[in-house]
Length: 301
Length: 150
Image (tube, rainbow over all chains, first blue to last red; front, side, top):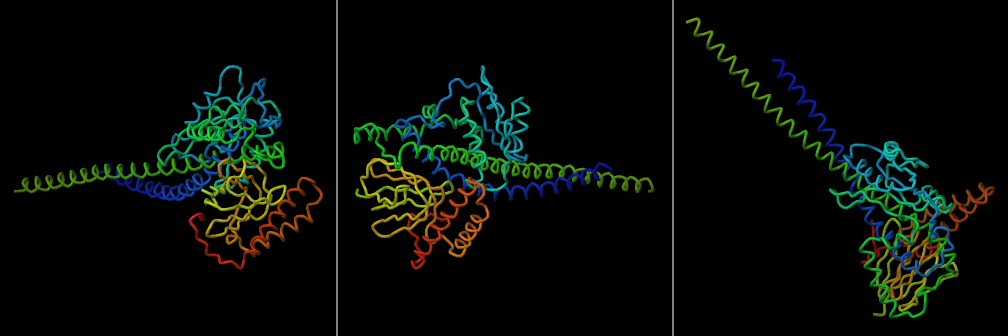
């Protein structure tokens, strides 16, 4: 029977695929663990850097180009972080509606891409890509993002951009990744829309501070505010970008792991179904043959 | 409490989180020591040795630049570019790094920007080696609660 041979071939084929997806699941599970650890252990730094700048923001003069707010600028720079490879479900395409949100009024948005899929997204939405940075397929160190961070700080210092935002998948848990827009620059506006938990810390902290310190600035700067800020501002931008990249990495690996797990399970289900059909056909064939033999015997008698 | 609530973090990890009695760190204006109830301060760090002292033990850590933030209320945060406990530094590899930096220095003196980068790298690797050598005689088995390992 030709149907049976076909089914047998399909069972074999799906079995082969399941092996591959299972292997990919193992690989991404290992990568996921690494990426998640890196993300979580670096959150402390980026949160503290963020706290520091929020604490300082009210005392500093705005002479640093990164502290300016360019109200006349018409452009918004968007850094889009995606994965290099596919098989991550809707992870990358989930970013598209978010990117559309930024688009509004007279504002022109320009895109800085990181990861191969970011370019596709930009092309689909008809965005102008100003720079494309290759994504490395390893856990990056903070030094690896200097070129990207430099580009961003220079672009912003040139005064052409109203703001710079970063669009990425925030890692919430292995099963949940949230497409997120975060404003990198300018800092001042960002402070009002900071995350709720860090806001809480800030307010309580400010209250204690008022009780203890009466003069204007509770901080001494060494050697002087300008010098410290010149060092600090690029660092903060770097740390925020770095954190976003790690988050996006962890999201990618988690999403891939989950996708591959689903694929492996789906293959298992399919094999079960096909095996059942195969067995039914086989049994049917045996029954037919038996009844033919019996019928032949009866005819002879 | 007469202790400092201290945290030393780098972009990659948290290196130390401890209650300290005192903390010495190298800033652009020289080595400073912070005691509990210090006034609010923000300073840039230069490559060098950081000495964190608790009641029971001493931590010697190499930092290669960063910031120290003293918050009012005996809370100190160091945002370091990179930091290592003295026992984490491999002396032979640190020596190699110094040699490499020295060689780069001789080869790349044409370009001012590159030269600045290379000399900074040399400074970092030298101070790293110094910290490692200075404390090489100490027992390397510090496993205090504040020490984070990967």
